[in-house]
Image 1 (spheres, rainbow, N blue to C red):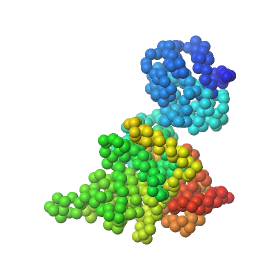
Image 2: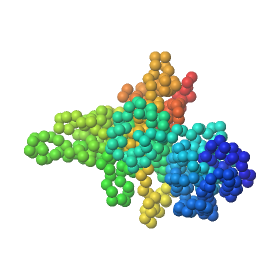
Image 3: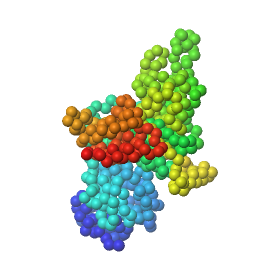
Image 4: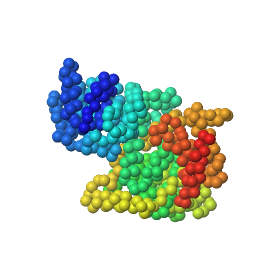
Length: 518
């Protein structure tokens, strides 16, 4: 295989220190870089290849197997001067969890630290999603050098460094701080790219869950966009299509729901319940404080650990709610208000997930149905893809039998990541529609959005209340897709305004999208 010596040297001369060379000859680049550094002060040379680690002047332990994430973590924490050569020929980067987040951190490190030169070698095409962090040299590639985005500014303000670490960021203090961010603070967070850590964690969790469930890619895209937008959504489909399992797994990855088989209790910030027509208010909103009722004749509920104190909730079989809890549930979902002891209390609820086998059959539940403007279709896996379902079932069954941990979803992200991205999506894609129809942030998208809303509001019975919720979802979709502006793809939100197993609504929205900008 030919080498790309001139391109590598040119990239180094241009101070591009995070490189991917489409080659697999580590030895050649070792000689090349040794020759180039003869006139400079000695630098540690670390090589990771099929033969293990070769360290000339540095003896700290490093990965000796094909553990690319651990190797990258070492480089991120490295304090000295060094050249790093990694042979990634046998590593499937597209299947490596957290790879984008690590390369973004490397990019930030190199922006602040001129001691490290990192050279990554691989014989596989490099994912286009990582091209913003690396310079690609030689071979086949998904993104040409012209398409490589400039490195984003590093986070230089200490005020937002806690966002980089999930454990430090997942605190009540940060929850309150996010809620009170000013426009100036949001501007600083966006300009510094400080929200990218939260973004990477959410995307990492989403991609992890897509691999665990057969043919649920679009569903998870919608679930995460709904969570960022803070729009209640309901998964609808026949029994046995993993509706509850998907939502529960997502909440596990956010550190809310307890891991399966663990002795830990679910977080008090998370509430989950399966409703029936016999469900009582005490089961959802908390029991009556009996002692206060006896001593002081006060009718007050003990809400700790129940829906009024939850931040994220999952209500299974939502449309089986009884009339006894319906009115309280309506005000809690829409106004985020709970009436206790005759006084209204604001609730911290930011997202509600629900599941149902079918739309409500009773007209008395129409108001509740309207509180869920997103109705995600969750069909059974098609016959042509049953082999994928079988593979997932086999892996899960094998793991349960032999005591593995594959079935447990690791805690990758947190609810504060969702909250921060919610504020960022509003900041990036905000602005009002002017009388002339233009939009400072949407570049005319809002006009197209309203055109689709007018076309569907009667056909799909979309209420006025749903308009802002659907637009919030569109903003979140654009953010999670990594787009800089909203386009026709965000009009797909109208595919979710009613349960449509026949596909008729999909076709109608497809026709509307073809008229985008016409």
